[in-house]
Each structure stands twice: as structure tokens, then as C-alpha cells.
Length: 633
Image (cartoon, rainbow, N blue to C red):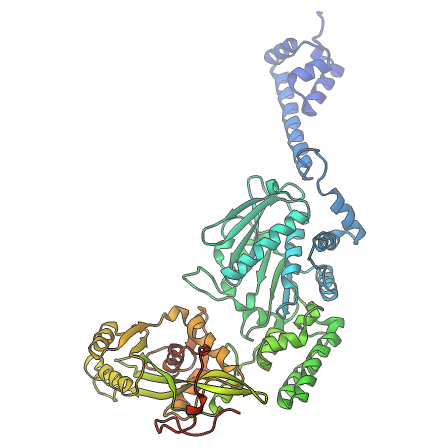
């Protein structure tokens, strides 16, 4: 019998196949058994059984090579040195107790070391510890403005995006949406996030930054295992959730989210529904921060906070910091008592007395001990309800939910003394036209310059705004529609000119041809109100003016003013972010809306020029409807 081929000897074959299983090539495997590669290839070609054994061994070798490559990628390495780029942070995390909470505090230490940066407040350190220890993925938190929410959120985003344990399928990029309430707020989040990522060790070359023309931004990088991650810094829009799986999420100022088709923003409910699907099957393992300052009690976040903890949600509470919260409220209440505002002090103390360790309403000064409690109150012009909401984290109750105008400010405007003067600085008109089922309305507001005495000798010039005419034209039951062209608009023009108004009327454009034609015939310019900007251009300036002391708006002494005031009280922000008049509809010919437009036409919130004015001419009654009262003293 001839010599047996070497590859058929068990010891040689075993050594050869082992080399192939370890990922070596056929040439390398031939060297392992000290055989020429040409000889090995001949054996494989002539013996089908041997060929199959070789191919099976090679398949195992390829799988092992892929596994080893993945294992190398499990640690993101410095491109120059090949060392684990996160080694120091891993070591620091162990010092803070290990786990993701250890990583969070290690990252926070890096961020706080930057010039001008701040460490976690005692409250946030305690609250974040409780959240991570709970094992629940979703944080629900209501904190006052200036409480340090942004710094806290940024630290969590950086920590979770880099160090959370995940296995991203090949070719995918998981995303973390960082959503805020509008484009302005969103733009403020990108810079701190980019700075934080660089502070923990990522360089410019590590970050893939894409700033879109619409202001939305995306920043990509690799996590500690080398997986691709992208943070999308967007306003509250479902667009940020399209595509791959979420690795987490941040809902900043969620209680204020509104839908706006022009801006492409969505309601909180719509965003949360979209996120639910984008978290895929492991939503319980991924961190999601839903955090905001207080808004109305019907906001989705506020409702979820009041529903309390469950398997998914962890509600941030005051805990051992309840005494700090109460102390801030008492500071303001005691000062108000010294100013004689006992009712306001009682309101604040009633809220403070309701707080317990389980309360989820976190004041600004608890989250941020450097917050100036009294200064924050002054900045809000000593408006108690506004301050309780903005800094005290008290959600607005049903009586005021969503209102622009707080009841007490309207009451002050109704009770404000009407200044009597020969010198009227101008009268301004606005119209709101309807013809079919709605009435049409006219409003005229007078602007007067008057003197306010400050102390014993100082004097200051101020504007006062007061309604002179509030009139409606209504369709009679069963009658014909209003005739705007021939009856209503000519009547309005006659009244406007008779009162010596600036020859212009503000209109929302409904019935535009008739408005412009009659206006041109009567010498009245037509100016159009942008209803999409009513919030910023009409309602917010009135809201600010009402809070001034003395109040520059008088809402009394005019026919139909009671109905207009009742409607003005109900001006609220709608779900689309626009201003609406609740319970009175958004139709035409409403006295509350036309009064608001006329006040805006008069320049409510503006100040008179500085040139000298003869105050001695003030004092006599014109007999023109501006009756009653003396000047401010």
C-alpha cells in the first residue's frame, strides 16, 4: 500500500483545520503544517470530502474574525493611539459608584470644570439619584424658570448617548431627539450641547454637525462602543422622530408645546404618540426626560405628573427640600404684608402651606439655590399669579387657565381713574366686520398724555388709553345680511371721522374689497391686522401694559364696555398657538377683539416722547365722553 497523503493523518488535518477555524488563510494554514500552499490546494481540488471540511472550517474562521472585529469596535478608540478614549471617564464613574449614575456624575464633573459652568444643585443631584435608582425610564418634572433645567438635561443627554448600553444593528444610526417649544428655544440648546460633547472628549472631527436652513440642527458622533448616534435639536415636531430607532429623548418645556402648521410643530400628545413607536420594543430601557416650567392644568405633562408614578414614569418631587421651597414663598409673602398687600400674601401662603415632600411642583430657587427670589418677583412686576406660575411652579387653575389677562389686572383697569385733559394725543379706530350670522363691530380708543407724580417733586409723562366707542351692528332675527358696502362701513367711517380719529382703521381683511373701497371714499386708510401674529402684536403688549403701575389702560365709562371686558378676560392661547376668545367664538364683530385691536392701533405699551408739555393746560372737562375723576397723584 502506498504512502497516505499527509492531510489524511489525524494530527496534520487537525492542525490544518484548527488554523482555518482561527481565521487564518489557506496559505497561512499550509504554513502551519509545513506544507507548500500548492500542495494544499491540490488536496482540496482532488478530495471533495476534504474540501467540505476546509470550507466549514473557513466559515467558522470568518465568523470568529467578524466577532473579534465587533469586539474591538465595542470600545471607541483614539484614532492616533488606539487607546480606549473613555478610559478616564470609566475610572471616574467607578469612583462615583459605578453604573449609569456614576457615569452621569463623572460627566457632570467634567462639565462643571469649564469656566463659568455650574455643578448640579443639591436638589438635582438628589432628584437624579432617585430617578436612576428607581429604574424607571421616563422623568416627569415641573420646575420654575431659571431652576437649572437646561444644564441638567444636557448632562443627561451626553451621558446617555455616549455610555448607555445598546447594540445598534449594522448600518443604522439611532437618534436622540432634543425637542423644545419653538425655534428660538431650540437654537439656545445646540451651543451648550456641542460644548458639553467637546468637554467630555469629543473633537471637532468627531462631531458631524448639520445646521439646516430652517434652523433645526443635527449633531452626530459615536458612542463608547463605536455605535453611530445622532442628537436632533428641533422644536416640538414629529419630523424629528422619523426614521431610525430612538435611543432616548428630551422634551424641553413640554407644557407649552402647541401645533402650528406654518412652523411644522406638533402637540405634546402627537409627539408622544410618535415617540412611542420610535422607541421600538425596548422603551423601558431608554431614558426620556419630560421637563418644563408650569403652564395650565390641562397641559399633557401636568396631567401626567398629577397622575403620579407608575412602571414607566418617575415623578420628580420636593422630598427633603420642601422647607427650602416654603422659605422662598414666605420671603415674598412677608414683604408683601409690609407693603399692605395682605390678600396677595395670603394667596402665596396658602399655596406654600399645601406643599409636602410628595409635592411635584419645584420652585426656581430649589432647583437653583442662586436664584434671587425677590428679584424674580420684581422682574414679573409683582404679579402674584404670574410669579407663582413662572417661579413657584404652580400650574394655572381652571379660572385662569391659558388666560393672557389675569383677573386682578383687568379689575385694576376697570377701576383706574380716567385722566381729564384738553390735550388728547390721538384717537384710533379698529373694525371687525361680519355680515351673515356675525355682527360687525367698531372700537375707538383715545390716547392721552398725562403727568404722574413720583414722590414729592419728580414727575413723569405717561400715556393713558381708554375706550370711547364700542358699537355693534347686528343682523335682525330673520332679516337680511348686513350691507357692509352701503350701510355698515359708511356708518363706521362717519363715527370715526366725527371723533377726530387718525384717518385709518385696522381690519382683519374680511370683506376686504368693501372695506378698502369705503375707506378710500371717506379718506380712511385701511391697515390689515396679521391675525397669525395677534399674540405678539396685540395681546401680549396689552397684557404687559395692564401690569404697569399706575395702570395705563382704563376699561370703564364707555357703552358696551362690560361685554368687551368679559370677552377680553377670556382671551387665551389656542391649541394652535394663536390667540382666541374662549366661549365667545372666533367669529367677526366681537367687542373684545375690536377693543384689543384698537388698543394695539393706539400703540398700547408705548411711552410718550420726551419733549416738553404744558401740564398747566390739563384739568378741564372737554365734555366729550371723557368724564369723571381727577388726575393721578
